Length: 428
Image (cartoon, rainbow, N blue to C red; front, side, top):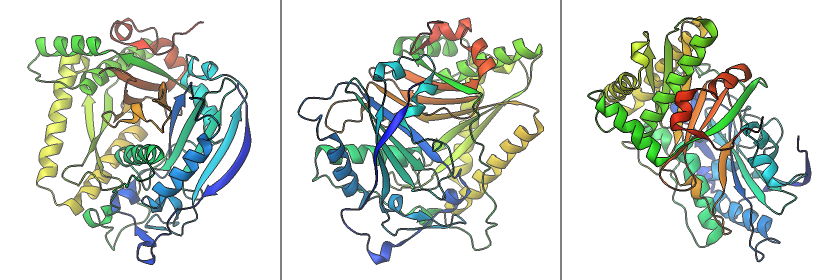
């Protein structure tokens, strides 16, 4: 396994200090009830143009300093009961690290777990309470390639906010005159009620070392085949890429579970749904509700039936939220989360968690030296499926995390391999 050496560690200060009027950033009810951990993303760049190679760190530091002036809560400190951020301009943590291997050794490993070396040790998916809300690591490989990783506090940012920040940071790196326009006003849409039980949060589970992850690619043509198959065999109309792909990985998960236990077990699959709109697109914070889709028979697992069920559940949630006051949405989200946790605790269902980072531009993040060859996350909890845009084309990459023994069965599933292929083939 590759090892790393920290060359330097510093705090990146804001280019412009935060005004006293913005010193206390009130967290919204959505922020308060969310998972209080660091979300870890990494971007790999194998070839750095000659004119950039000696000044990469300076470009990243200078642009981060400027963009933090607009994203000032990331340079502050979250208070102990998750009700506000003290925007005290402490800064964001920044590490310069040397990795003792070529980049190819990491990105050509069949298992995504190898990317852990480009993140600060023990930080991904860990608590963001006593650490900077933003921790950046610039990793230098023996071959001259680099990786830029960012661990951001989920208390302050959901996936939409994170992608906006990374895109704005890259735009600033290319043009220091660029001016981001985030709005930290989520608490006006989702205010913390005065009678809030400050322990009412979604419980956090940290990844186990027994979990492994692999990335699979659904090409545009295979996604079209899946969509055609689903629509021909049902009344489903216009299924999305994620609907058909998540239905397939869900079915493969059920097959794997049945092979292991010899019987069918009901399932619960969760999807995250962005609440922007109706919340404005530039509102930073957490603005997500969850869709719960259950199956209690093998027939409901079939692709056309599952996609139809998923579409119905999504529409029912939209209809319910459409007439709901915005300040009631967090309570409803918390209720859905607790329902899911009750099912998990009773162990009556196999549970699969889906999230999508598609249509965010993250697969094309360019700090000035070109687009990444790989965008990924650190290994998370079991039965987790994270969908991302592929680096080129209209296909999807999905990062699949399972227990080791389940992954061995999953990766040989014939139906999976008919429509998806591992981004890195196994040599074993």
